[in-house]
Image 1: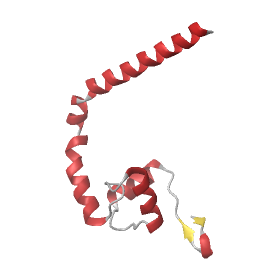
Image 2: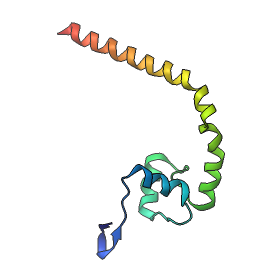
Image 3: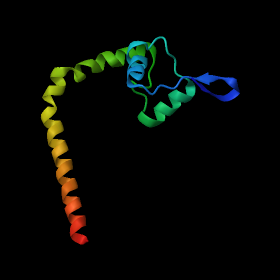
Image 4: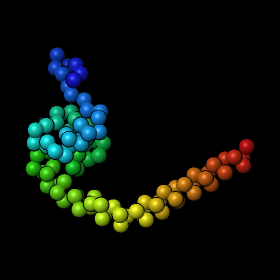
Amino acid sequence: MIPSVLGQTRIVLADPRAIAHFYARESWTYVQTPLSLALIENMVGRGVLWSQGESHRRQRKALTPAFSNAAIRKLTSVFYDSAYKVWISNVRNATHLISKL
């Protein structure tokens, strides 16, 4: 907990397991402040990270099939191809920069 304005305290999560617990398992227990909701909305929009309660549960349930092991396995080639294109582009840029020296 860290001190906040007017003598209040806030909980700041930095541990990935604590963050996963906060967003996935106990969505009914933890309520986000209006400021944190506004910040999340500005950063990523009104999606699964922004929603709370029943809306959050529905969105997670709808997204679950897209992140199953089988779905991710099917996309491995897409990830590999994209990473390879980025790597090649970086190698070409570095080669171009070195040739200018």
